[in-house]
Length: 302
Image 1 (tube, rainbow, N blue to C red):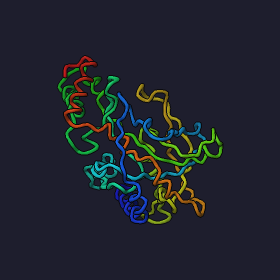
Image 2: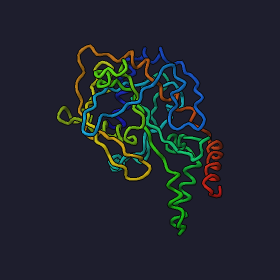
Image 3: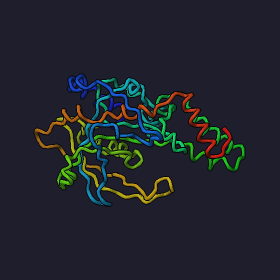
Image 4: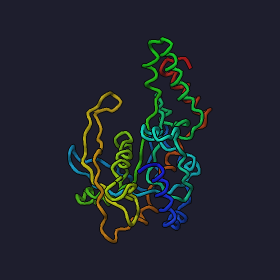
């Protein structure tokens, strides 16, 4: 699914399910935890179960449930940077999503900077999220400039100042339900699965030219959607950044759901990820202060 197809799909979905969003636009102000890394689910009224992929080469089976946008800033949020194919097609810059409060979004794709000290945690990258000036990115580019000018230490320093794109989905996990673990109802969250690569694989695999030149499975539709079936593929770590390794889903099949399955109410009750990420959006000045603290702790002169 291309960005244009995703926008068109959501436009149609929001027109069909307008009442869902209108009944669920009240927003909550979450504070976030000190030194928060990623999203903080602790303030929700229920326990959140994080999806655990099946063992290597074993199959996963789940449905994706969109969420209702609650925050005005989401309309300005940019898609991830254009892929090579998109650039070759003439798209030079990331496009804003244009998703308004009360409308549905398939998932949250958001770029983070990680700060070294325990008090600062993560922060949303202002440049790649909103196309604004970002002091963290400016420092990253400064290190690369220093590297090109012959600074032998600049490349190592720059590695701690990059961007990490993360993706968050609400899902219904069929395998967890079938195993009946602890009476779990199957509703889970995919948090940063495969370094954000899951969405890329879904977009790639959801196209089916045999059913039409521009056909894309409407997998996230509440009544006409498809269940995703995908084997886990374990990737050994290539650096310390990925710890013990990670799981990807490069081959995804789409199974038509059984007649009568309706996730409309589930969309209304799903986690609005934009609310949870709001405490991680800072002004330029706040980002600069956090950056200075990070550099001092790394013994780098701000």
